[in-house]
Length: 248
Image 1 (spheres, rainbow, N blue to C red):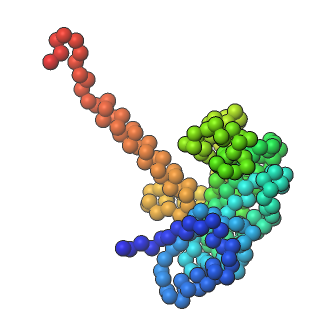
Image 2 (image 1 turned 90 degrees about the vertical axis):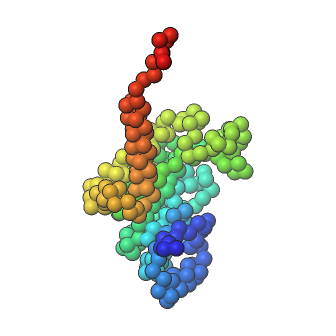
Image 3 (image 1 turned 135 degrees about the horizontal axis):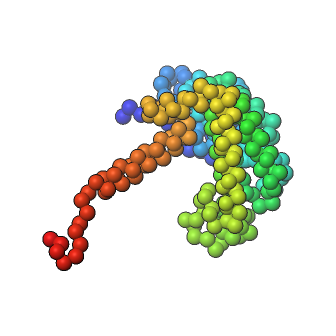
């Protein structure tokens, strides 16, 4: 059918290092000319430079990983140990291997402070300077069954409200403003330290060939905006119907 790009959906695709290396070598041995991406994400502690080189040689072009926060204190609140120095090393390894990368973060975890969010913003800037191709910042929301569900008021919420845009949160406006600042800082650092890659977003929008999620998101939003504006123009160009007793 001509499909040459595959996105692997797996909770932790690189956790079994041997399996990932075998898969990569099989793709090379069988000369399968395909591109594949770990777009859903993988545990950064499971990544090492040798494995990433094998993956890149086999056609891997994108890896998403999650430092979650720039604050060790927040990692403690989450009960999720994260080695932030390794996150920096992974970013460098991916850059050297020629693999596009995404780093994912969450803000708004219960107990998080402004100082914690400043540490997250600082890590995003550092990764942008290294060359991470996109950063994703989510406002945390509880999932049914998680230990955050009831303390955050999730039990009273419709499931459709449990998204990464939890407008029902009392602190949503503050967190949304923080997220915008982090994104602005990321793009500024990207433009300063990797201008050609930043300008590559514009090329991707024109060509329709995307390597990252942010390019697809921008393209989709512009396309929707274009459709909305076109619809308004069509409606404004129609003759208005007459009203009143003399109307035909």
